[in-house]
Amino acid sequence: MDEATPILTAERLTLTRPDDWHLHLRDGEALKAVLPDTVKRFARAIVMPNLKPPVTTVTQAAAYRQRILAAVPPGPTFTPLMTLYLTDDLPADEIERAIDSGIIHAVKLYPAGATTNSAAGVTDLKKCSATLARMERLGLPLLVHGEVTDPAVDIFDREAVFIERVLTPLLKDFPALKVVLEHVTTQDGVEFVKACGANVAATITAHHLLLNRNAIFAGGIRPHHYCLPVLKRETHRQALLTAATSGNPKFFLGTDSAPHARRTKEAACGCAGCYTAHAGIELYAEAFEQAGALDRLEGFASHFGADFYALPRNTEQITLVRAAWRVPDELPYLADDVLVPLRAGATVGWKLEDMQ
Ligand code: DOR
Ligand code: ZN
Image (tube, rainbow, N blue to C red):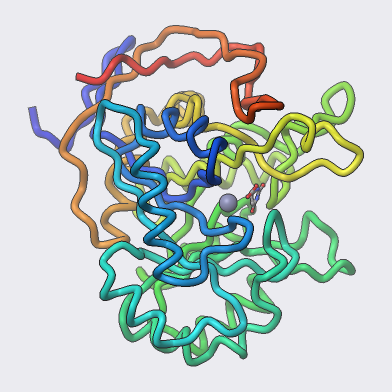
């Protein structure tokens, strides 16, 4: 059988081991708690740098990488792909050091104040011109949290306004810059990415493929469905599903799995983030199946991201079995608090078979 063809029967789906191109692993005891979920499923992950304090230097990223590697449980190999956190004063020379290190694969742009641990983010992209020029020249991708922070802009419009006010001018100034519109959530975002050249791509989360904004308010307020960018209306979910299952290599998997302790989610002002790593590939299988496109899952999950980052595709495989399993109500997280995963107490329809 041709290696590139996913083996699909009604009950089993075997595909090249996937990668997660957008992941929050945190640090310390939280890192140790969540990392096994990712390692079981994914060979590599782009690790977000929004720690407290953020990862802004190659030296910090190298130390964080060592802490991640030290926390990898025995079993399949796992390669963390590190990122730097863009600030107003990240020096252009740090980009040179990043390339030389061989461990840094991208730089993350958080508009200041846009989301969790983004206070040190960029206040004005003009301040980053020299650094962006160096990234463009050296081919280091910019990963974008694509939301404006202007409180006058409706929260459901912040991605579309970001595209108009920030992303379009950015790509005019740096037309060859590699850009990933992370966790794209709108039809506007999908259309924008499709209209750009091959240097612009997007990740899509499983929760944005499976849920629309009604899920935040189903029978009461549901803090575990609150993430940023916030879930959008059904037409946008449909546009994401169409893009993800289209076979267009500009769209690939990024879970944005973002753990928060239960008490920080179930609070008067709860944190943004959905934890999905416990079913990090299974949830996508559900979404693709709903769209009648399980045969397109492998390209999206295992090929297109590696191609964009100019990394080799993985050679091992994983197998998913059609079998419903119940997601626990909570997962261990910190010594004094737990984590509530997506689908807590409910079932997921695909199950990961033990690694071959
Ligand atoms: O929901 C989110 N959670 N969105 C982000 O952009 C950050 C993330 C986190 O770090 O918790
Ligand atoms: Zn994220």
